[in-house]
Image (cartoon, rainbow, N blue to C red):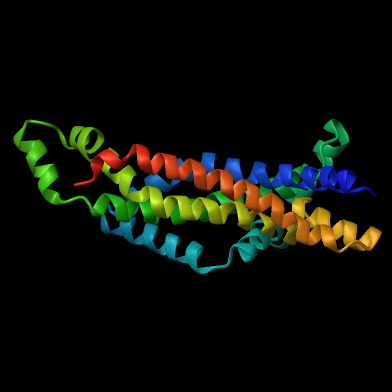
Length: 231
């Protein structure tokens, strides 16, 4: 295989990595906010349940969570849910690994939603109570104070930790390989097994570096846009 053919082969896998990345953000970012609200709730049972849930998800390795979501339905209910999705979409639409990818997306979305929720919670709780009180004095409702006064300040404060988490996400997509999803690392392993080519495995790092570089530039620009909150 030529260098260009190998690059295209790896790009096919990187498309899956990018798909996992964007779907996780689309689902995980908004899902993290209600989890954070539950963690800050004054209703103690709800607060306790949310904190335990976040503790479990953050404490168990993501790879193990992928295994649990993909294999447990078959072990407990004797029904290979994701395997059936694989077969159905492959036979009817020619889509490969759909069930495996779905299991990975569920695991990633839940996992990162919990991490995002803690970032949201830290940002919201970092705003002084005096700002809420000042809003009430001006006749604003609590929701108005949050959306008109607090929210943009929270965004400014959570951008650095959020950017770190999002950059980690693109690298974590390699964990999809654990259930044989054909992301970029799996593609490189396939070349190693079938063509006895090891160097493509190291070459995959270039794809991650370029993607992380683009993300870093975007987040730096976002931080500069929010610099008006300084002081």
